[in-house]
Length: 112
Length: 111
Image (cartoon, rainbow over all chains, first blue to last red; front, side):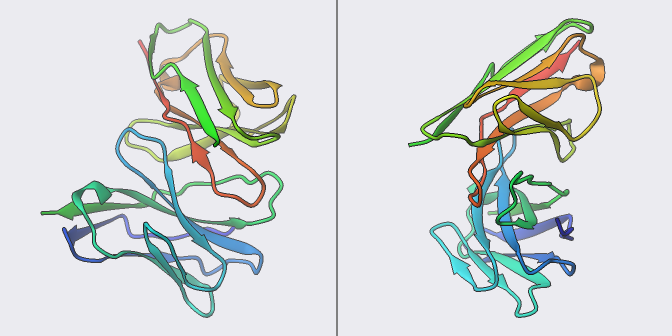
């Protein structure tokens, strides 16, 4: 599975959009981009995933560049409860083992 | 609906004692199952995964073992705990091509 690079930490004002970048320059054609987040002392929570088209759900939007070498997770109106570590992971959708390898992630601090 | 149960929530064990953590999944069949560990202030480390009954793959050689005696049951064990085994243990499941669902975790402190 391709490696990802994320900033170590970011701040965001409450009510504003939080844009979390991720670089995955070695991504393969069959690999999807997944985003998870982990709120302190809880298990990771699935947010969204995509292949090449932009995706949106009730939690967030995922913007993937045309060359697929980077992506951005957007939380449109960040709240204090969105303070968490956000993980960007790439892996093959059809992987039989489905191993999810976590990096260090981005610690997002939403401030009032 | 699918649910994942993990217990106990917290555990304090002396060095050298055995360990058994259990994870069960409901509402699905033949899931892939995973054990992760998160040491204090560190990232999530994949320990074991299983794609079927009796099939266990180890990611990191260590003092722990895993077993899958039933389709929806995954057990993490140790014969003798070390101080370095302390951490937050998470069980997760997925079906091929889908997202992961994590349990609520067990916080293990070895004293």
